[in-house]
Length: 384
Image (cartoon, rainbow, N blue to C red):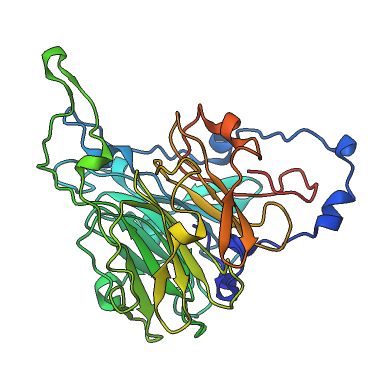
């Protein structure tokens, strides 16, 4: 997740300026250049390698790690990069440097330096998602790391170092969390924290999935894991948080959460929450403006695909892809499925635009973990 104080505005996720349809039409398609990228990680000094620690037991968590947060941790005007990492199994400890989470400082000129040790963000436990934001309004971007039964909140001290304030802030967790995001759900000017939780799991879970007679073991289907509710923490404005999951109407909705996206999709002035679920209907929590949410994914048309079935929903991005001023919704899934695209029709409803946008044919052979709309070729239309 990206750090943006502008989350307070409650517009489409990441709040990129919404271009008008007219401005997009002014650019001739004949003048467009192909979209090209060049791999420069090694040259830039980004030598991070994800260690998920695969085991013969095929533990489900091995398929899930790998989070990234891009943010300017030292306020030098350059975007730095933070990576999450795994841990030993079954100890669930980072007992070797290869399992450390890593922070790379952007030195400019496409060069990065690993500052994990001096920044004190190597972490603990089996880490997954990351979300960066200035939660205490002191001008420095802080960092939240989601993990398996161990989440961490780092307060940015402003001197290149972070302090683990998880317990002090009141957000210690015993759940398997995979992702998180910051948003101001009560419009008080302070960022609140939404944590996405996956399922019940322990290292001694040893269900055999596969073919025993051929000694062919595979990772178990998500259906064998009991889901969890997500967690909402309200910012108390004093460096601590209150767990308002039940009070806000979130606790009663059990899923296998994978990601979260925020937007005021119905333009009522309050930021809403979309959560992807793994092989379960997705959630759309409509912010009712009184501190509570109503789950409306089915009514809004974003719980399932157009065939009425859930998919292995993973990434999610709220963005206005058709330049009509309304936040649309993109979701990724596994190969053999499609990447659902939901077009916002206004008045709180969406329609499945996966096929008419040609995404169905383009995505059915691919697996997508994360996603984002961005205008890569500057033609006024967002690419995916």
